[in-house]
Image 1 (cartoon, helix red, strand yellow):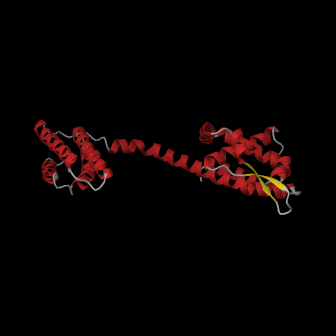
Image 2 (cartoon, one colour):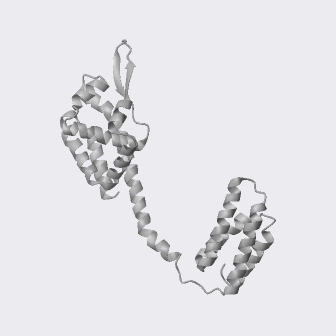
Image 3 (tube, helix red, strand yellow):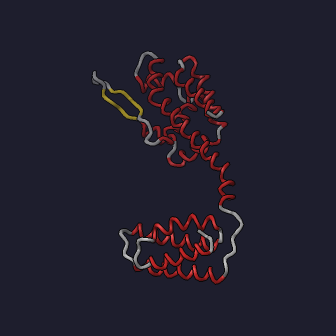
Length: 251
């Protein structure tokens, strides 16, 4: 577990398990961490572009009829994970700044004379999902960061020195590609998606050849061949192209 994940989990657990008398400290601790984390701030900003907190809160309010016939206000959780995460952050901010009183909030929406019991209900409905979503957001960020670190290796893999291909051989291969393109347009496919795949792989093969990058040519050829091989009108040209690639040590 990386350091930021560990801090978030610890503060989320403290928030979930807190007693009313300690919530000022646990809420403040969580909000300070949120404010220092760019990944969370970006997610919250994107969510607030979708819907404002004021509208989200208004939409979340509902009224139920209790067994004794009296009415009880309740809150529904927002419909998506990103909106729920943002909702909780904004709600905690209101508690922290005093804009909304936590005790009054619990009495209004959880109808319990025991504030700690009401807080436990609030925690189960909002804080535990909030923790789970926060962990997912941070995990995704860690994965993205890992990809960023290996990206240079990927670029190096696909950027060796270009091989020499004579002009005559290149023209011969590109001519075969153009014939395959033309034949594909009149070919009968099982579906529009299959036709689109054939067109896309043919274009990819053409550009791979023009790159003169042997690794890229070899990789694209595999996908190109298995996409085109069943087509009767182009099979002969596909075999000719494969023979030229083999003769020139390109596959």
